[in-house]
Length: 597
Ligand code: BDP
Image (cartoon, rainbow, N blue to C red; front, side, top):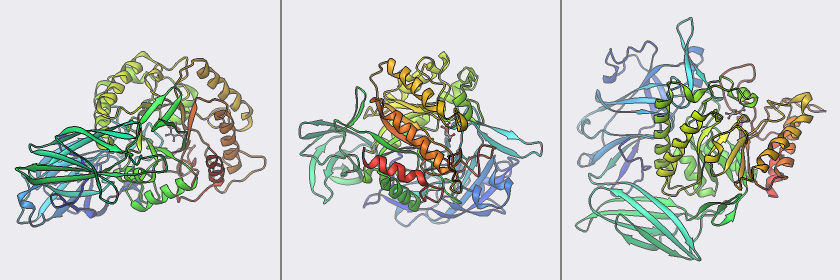
């Protein structure tokens, strides 16, 4: 990844043109595309929406579950006036990997399905005529790439995805696509970090740009300039700043101006929030004040749309989260589309931003095996060096993309890996240092630990700045008739953690039960809504007994699609909301509790 991944911003110097719409599309089950020169154009293509996940649009299983190579194509003209500048194509993501061709010529390739891909196409476009972008994509899972799984070839010859994780392997061009015109010399990146001294905010900034004179301005919402500085690195001071606070956000505009001989050649504007993040003993502090995290583990998931970006879903999800009095969510189990973070910045939500390091347990039912303590030697196999390279690269790309969002207060570097072996420790020691080195704001780093990761077995938790636990006492273990034991077992574990005197905050990043809106039962039974409420109340009882527990993110915000299986009823039903974003009974329970914390 060499190009700037700054989110498109339009002004007198930069312009972007959306390429969203109906593209041409073709499956390539036999991998013959390149031999047949599909990179020069697709014959007999079908139409496919972009952004879009292709799976749930079809009525045939082999298309829904398609695993392998597939191709997209779009034809476009370069707007008049752009010929003097550089032209890029920017994808919010290509899931899980893609090779981009412009007018038949390979421009770049990218591994990893949840972060932007930007390609400079200036040298390959024809400014006077029609242009063709073709992308060869692939959505196979392996133990070399993230998220982790395998690809099975059925006896029928058809390939299917076998994820080691619990969400459907939606794929395609799932996020916005733009053509972007940038000046020949341009602003490439910036970072800011904030210190608060008494009533003054000190903003340290760094700008990456081509040669030229850099000036930065900080503006209030009405446009008033409150601080100015010159140079590619420097400091801005703001007296009596409006701080970015949780559920009470204020955003300044950070304006970067690049000039040559006193003539402006580029300008970039972005919203930033002034806030600090610290772990102080067992508290998570924003602007020096402890915050208790209330909210959800989420997914990008919706009926028909799959993982396609859609502003209405983002908006509805924030409205539902606000209604429950939540203040936080985890982007389980991959970085979401950038627009989620923009709205979180505006709404004052906190985000635990997660890299797609899920499935590091070699299990098709990680949710069951995790609870039962299955040991897999995952980190001792030959795939590890390449996996670690991909994992590190995606951490760097995630931090590069998201580092300036005030909402992002922490990085989650894994979900439920095997953590009890020395090779696991060695692996994650390096992974944590990659993240710590990449983040100019030095945010706390963590990862979500499954039940096998106990104080006396887990080798990885000492690397975490705060401890995140995924626990299912009362569901995968001690569920149903045995429910009496769930609280006993749960508290026994918490007492072990307490004895460690870690002096670190603990956050529950997962706890929940599947339930169906149709099921009610007195007395309660697993899968009924009453059971979910009782389970949640038991967890609240435990949380309130241990002052070092500083957050509760329920699994999951809404029901979501998964691979098929005897434990999944058209997906995972642990939602507090249905997949259509209507409240289940538990939503009212959470709303009441969170109103008073
Ligand atoms: C955990 C996983 C999560 C699953 C959840 C569940 O982190 O992805 O969806 O369990 O079983 O193991 O619902």
